[in-house]
Image: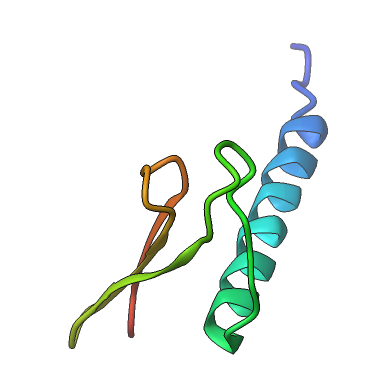
Amino acid sequence: MTKLDFSFINKEAAASFNQQRNLIKKVLKGQKVLCEQCNQPVLMTNSDKEQVSIGCSKGCTNIDMDKD
């Protein structure tokens, strides 16, 4: 039986996670961050007791997070 090598997929997923985490940190610190797709500012778009949403005005970038 041949073992499947998922190391490339794992590296890509880790890089994507780290990129999103850094974007979230910058936005929450109040730093100016631009969307990679449309170059519009990425801002906190919604915040309530349970969730925080971060994204651009066009919706290219959209990250929803639970506050837990």
